[in-house]
Image (cartoon, rainbow, N blue to C red; front, side):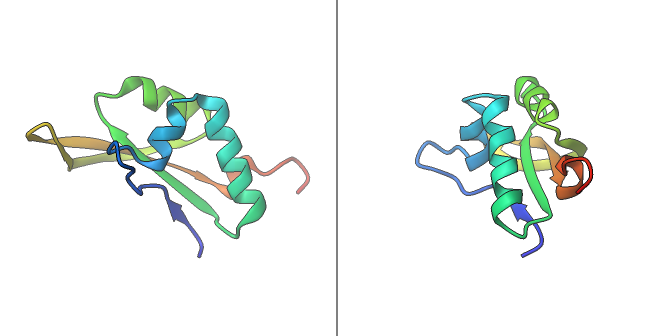
Length: 98
């Protein structure tokens, strides 16, 4: 496996990454560090709705890079919504000298 997309949905309709976003940027950073330290994953993706500015800021603070807008990517509350794709690569968080 060379990349990981965190999109499994829980009973509340939240993805794994959205659940972690609820507890803050620190949790996101810890999750990223853990996955890179304990798996061979080289890419982690996270998606959010365009309107969710707070989550976008949290992802950016956790060193995710905004890659683009996914038009009509999700259906919620009776309408299609655009999403934003973010990713972080192993090289983005590699310690200096590694």
